[in-house]
Image (cartoon, rainbow, N blue to C red; front, side):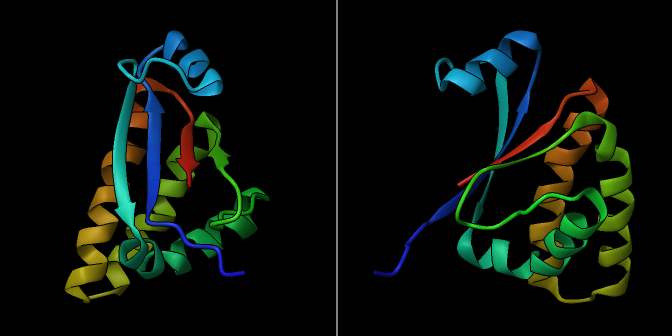
Length: 116
């Protein structure tokens, strides 16, 4: 059996209610969402791999993952380093989407949920 998925949702709670809404999969009005398709996710795999090693998490398509609020600033540094080293236009577009979600998490001091 091949596992198929189409999207990765980068979700940032806008407030404490958003954290609860995400946990119970209820109202999404308190959650900021950026969507990556499979190609964008694949383009960002080196970034996710580095995050996995640095933050002792496992970002993969088999389960959801959380990047806690305290790690988001350091995750942004890693992402920026990858952006600076990669001139591929498709990668840069995908990275900017990830950067939007990460910036919102940093601004609000909230976690970044990666949901598949």
